[in-house]
Length: 92
Image (cartoon, rainbow, N blue to C red):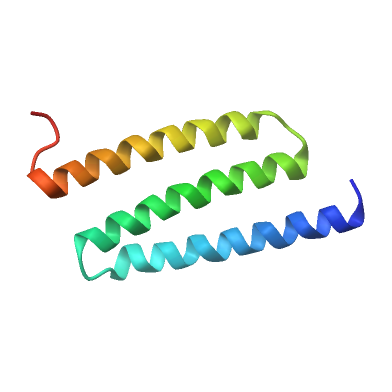
């Protein structure tokens, strides 16, 4: 791995961690439930991107599988939370 690529991946990791920190702040301080759901959705996305960046950094395929599982779990949880906020129940 070249030095420029290593530097770019490290910068990406720092940016993703900063975005995750800001999402946690919005999750804790969000004035409405919709803000908290949006922050949680963004946090899942950042976690997926972090796993992908770590997979590129270390060259291990297990990170890519973890990113796929995080993406699927995040999607399902966002749909369930949105349905709960709209109707008041998840299972009909």
